[in-house]
Image 1 (tube, one colour):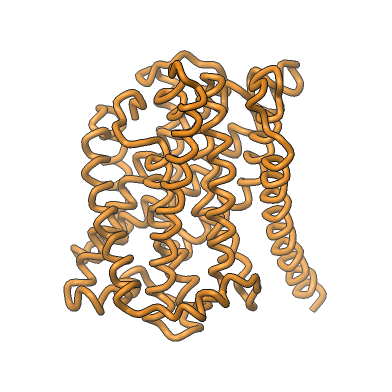
Image 2 (cartoon, helix red, strand yellow):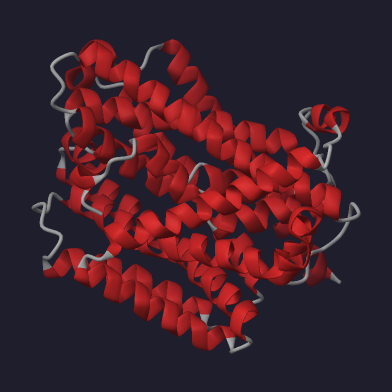
Amino acid sequence: MNLRRLRIGPGLLVTAAFIGPGTVVTASKAGAAFGYQLVWALAFAVAATVILQEMSARLGVVTGHGLGEALRDTFTRPASRGATVALVVSAIAFGNAAYQMGNVTGAASALEILTGASRNAWAIVVGLAAAVVLATGWYVFIERVLIALVVVMSAVFIITAVRGGPDLVAILRGVRPAVPAGSGVTIIALIGTTVVPYNLFLHASAAREKWGRASDRAAALHQARWDSALAVLLGGGVTLAILITAAAAFPVGTAIQDVAAMATQLEPLLGRGARNFFAVGFGAAGLTSAITAPLAAAYATRGILGWPSDMKSARFRAVWGFVLAVGTVLACLGWRPERAILFAQAANGVLLPIIAAYLLVVMNRSALLADHRNHWAANAAGFGVVLFVVFLVWQQMSMLWGRIMASGGG
């Protein structure tokens, strides 16, 4: 992904990265199982994304650094730098490997729907295809085509949601926080599929490339903020449309058993063509993210380790190759695709507070950002996001531990 060649705004790049199989699966499962009760979790996720991506974009515009480089400049002592590098690299590697599992699984599941061939076999084909695209540099053209397909699928979800006459009263009630029984993992997954940790690295680098050399910094910051906010709100609207169509298509409490069943949401608009159309759009979302996620991991690792900006270097390729290989192997283990994808998004939600906390440390450095550092409102919002996600994760871990202890005691 040569950021200099991108013609879309960095905000749309972020949106394209998080509107993938994880978004479709997680929002569909949330709507089918809980109706409109988790609209509040999506609203929180969108607000959190706007807050954190604004910081990331501001960092790139003001300093001319990506988040990885900024962390290297912030933690200069050997012990603190070593701990930071180890933590961030392991978090990005683990998070993107889990995310990649969901991407490959999603694309392979779509191809299984279209052809009837084994999903595991298709997972290997998808992994190899992504590797070829990354190694040869064809991804600029291919990503544009695939993103166009995802945009079309997203538009169909939005049209279906609007034509279906959504229950506005129920949606507004869903803005009030509630945690229905069994919804904890889905809530964390909704957050993890929207506030994607690697996007914080990707956005800073993209904003640096687009506005880092602007002569009018104030105007550049204004543009970056609007670009980020509008793009994230657009992505949030697509996710809400998916949740609404699922809530309308399935009785509350439905546990979606396979990816193909999600096409039911689109039958009111597309009729018999819904299954194949959904498969094409879902597969495009998976392939796009399967290309983007390993590359973003390599960019983040390059930045924090201080490597030269050479995409053809062996170590840069080793990073995206590792993430792609691990994700493909995990996708071949035979997990049900909707469970694998939901797990990947939940893993992102668990890792989010770590990366967000590092971003907040960087954004409070006067030596780095001068008058553009975070002020109290941005810090309050950012720390609020971190603390709330930590609380959700801690609550789920406590419940899981309680079940383990109860099972052991029985």
